[in-house]
Length: 354
Image (cartoon, rainbow, N blue to C red; front, side):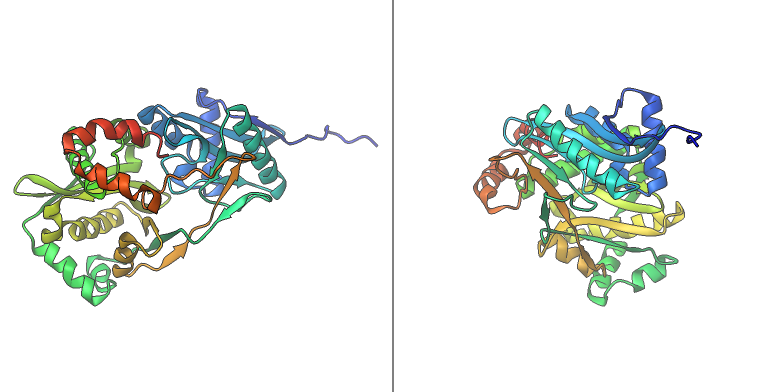
């Protein structure tokens, strides 16, 4: 007896992110699969709009239903080369798939797409490592935990030594506010730009942060701490599936003495709880670095992150880690640039640091 319906074969294609219907379909799949904010087409489109890189991705489908999705940013930089990254300007990404077969097809298609686009590598910042790819382990750790029931419990959950630092921040002469208006955006960018310059890192273009705030809508905001009217600490936050993530942030030299960063993160926990969040994701840090230890001081336990990469035959592995020893001299020179000069040149370089 013949089957009542023809058997459907799983097919893999490059997504058309110019099609609102396609975008909506992928957004629904990401939600169903419990993907991260970095899997969302909204993230890809925002970062592409803000940096001039290209948002793309690969879908697997069967019978008209999505079975897999690989979010990708096509990155081109005269300094750092060409690569497909899942996802660009993010700490997460990788393959979302309903089956190992779909995952395998997406990985194979990613390498084919890399060759077509003359990319030396494909980078997956999350998910399982495909067979034959290079696993990247031990370099970074993530920090996340459940939010406590209230402000007092949140403070009590912090180890005693750092709890004292937070209390100093709570007593400091600081005004803290949340928003997405131009005043908050300008305060954030001024603070963030000064902070990364002090670290010797080129600043991202302001257009990147504007695009993320605009595209994500209620899924992003900014918290700013001001001392006598001047911003001293600011963070751009992402909200996704009940989790808040302070993603980009920085503080001025004055922030340390005022414990402004401590105040900002503590206020963010309270703000996120009021929004209905139950989890605080402190993001990733290079293992055993200063930020890594800072997050441990808050009582967060490090979770090793596993990434994966594929490189074209004979191509070197792309290295955009600003803490790598090979960049030490460049970082030292960058710190010496006047801030206005660094702010003009930085975005031209940072666009390739996806």
